Image (cartoon, rainbow, N blue to C red; front, side, top):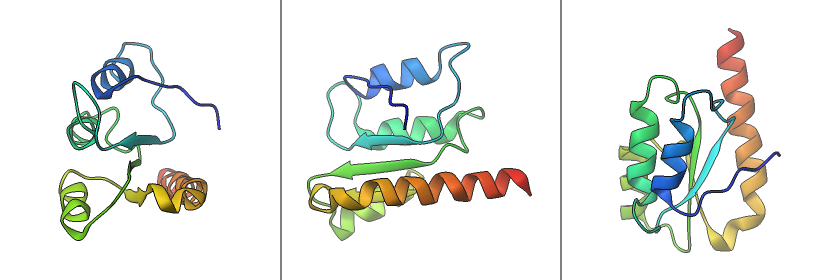
Length: 105
């Protein structure tokens, strides 16, 4: 993976929406961040026509049923808790591959 980092959700959204910034293959976001949380970031990504197809994984120390529902409601493509960190790369690759298959059809 080629990784681009942002210090918070607002910084990430500003970068993603910058003219000329290429749409990433995937976004992995913490839920709890300063200035803009991961739910708001995800909602804004999914509302942007250029970014809407970008898979988003929400990452948090604990994903409860309530938080999972909230993530689904804003359009998160995957959610993973920090104890499941080893599964993050596998989930990211599967979402990127699924997006590539959809784009190819």
